[in-house]
Image (cartoon, rainbow, N blue to C red; front, side):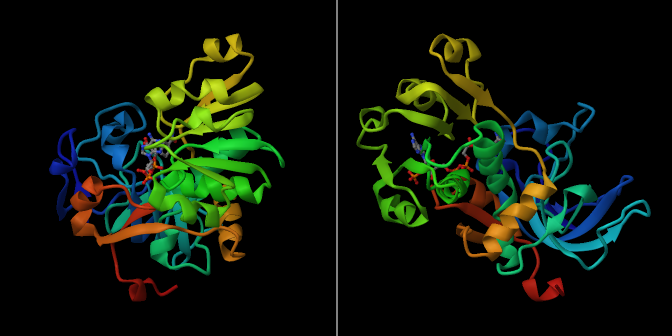
Length: 313
Ligand SMILES: NC(=O)c1ccc[n+]([C@@H]2O[C@H](COP(=O)([O-])OP(=O)(O)OC[C@H]3O[C@@H](n4cnc5c(N)ncnc54)[C@H](OP(=O)(O)O)[C@@H]3O)[C@@H](O)[C@H]2O)c1
């Protein structure tokens, strides 16, 4: 099969479009013919990209951990998923990814592809959509009427977080460059702060939840805008529990996990027209390198792996 692979740890210049063996299945796995995959630009810097699930080196490695496609085969012990099913999923970070014509994945991680969107759009949901869901609902337990600040609202995770928080009837404040302000209001933000011109802490206050998708100084400057009992959640770097406790606040840092039930919920919201999927750019698989070095786009960058007509779904 054709795949994007890296033969050593490094940057996008090491991504090679080449022939690779079709993945072998483990018990409980499905083999999926990938139609489209998305990338997360930072994934080439993650340790998990280069190690297997037992912590041993995994080289060459295939990136891309969210995709849509059609099930090609399942192992004999698999029930509930069959060849021909149109699916989408977040795949385990410690196994080879979906920037390839085929991926082997735990069948329990597969969810039915939302019916109303293309394979290309469906591939832009699992990683970013699940991250936003788990941050807001599992970790922050966001409630109706609460005030939430989402940093980087126009990004992959941000576009889902803004919409999901708004769907929960929270008051959504977000940060973005000026050209994304109208777009983010359409997605449900009540206030958008231009982080290139203003310091968000001069506008936002008494916030119940901060979702940090930026890290560094942005994370540090976020403490002061939280109301007592509020929570600072980062998806970028660990947040000090001691500092949170000393301020009467809570904190969390987490790595998104595959979760079929939540993908089904996201799919329902998509099919109901409540959740929009934002694909900022789509490129053929062989142009993966360009995708990794692209500038800011709205939402996700998708790689087209196979023609949609070949999906038979
Ligand atoms: N822990 C996890 O499980 C997990 C899961 C997914 C992603 N992540 C991490 O989360 C981060 C974001 O991922 P992503 O895919 O959403 O990124 P992305 O699509 O590249 O989005 C980044 C967005 O951030 C905005 N931005 C840049 N600097 C900013 C600043 N100082 N303040 C506010 N906004 C700023 C840009 O918006 P404008 O275009 O408006 O300027 C850009 O669109 C990455 O570091 C990624 O590795 C972690």
